[in-house]
Image (cartoon, rainbow, N blue to C red; front, side, top):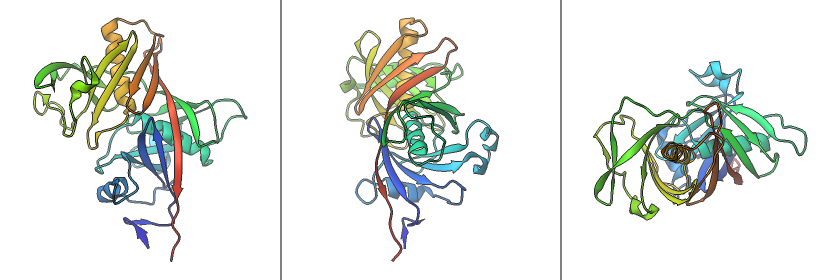
Length: 294
């Protein structure tokens, strides 16, 4: 028997970070070839498990093209969007991935009551994660998301808001984002379809679009349309992009804490003096799915 083309002996796990949810597929030796169609079926909320994406757990040394990251991170987060497309990074996903590695014994944990810190390899580089509680099904996880980049090659970018193009901030967090500041997250509309981003073709691999509104000083609320998925309850890299765009707008000093509310919860951010952006938020493992051979 197979489950959408995967051997049923593979124990699948469902997890989420601020309600951005994932199916986790353990494949430490890199023996599985997961097709876009299989990913889409696993993520289907009616005919599958249901998720915004799939996290494949594979040893970095077994990940073609990324073996050089093995010295910094034993495991690679192979992330796929719900439509099966490959993505460079996922901020909520890396927190869930880190919790899974600890809870399932893939990485050594620190002494009881002390944080566990280790690297996770991704297509967007190695991310250092710290869990403030280990071994349980839930934890707060802090991720060094690296140094945000404001690309200068794309020129002016606009996003259509309520029928009118508005200037957007182009931010790269290992994956591309277009952040537009609005009066209210409701200004994003239904988000049933990809927002109109101009000039056409400026993002050849498509882009994640964030609609951010001020709640209070250093506190924003956002909605997001994720490429290859649609509107999601949360987007970690998108919230990073919102925070850093707001910090530059506000001329905020390094060390200033920002809060970003997403539909599924709350994330906290600090830009360190070295330019690295730290994100802290919850992660939870919801259930395991193990099918037996008939």
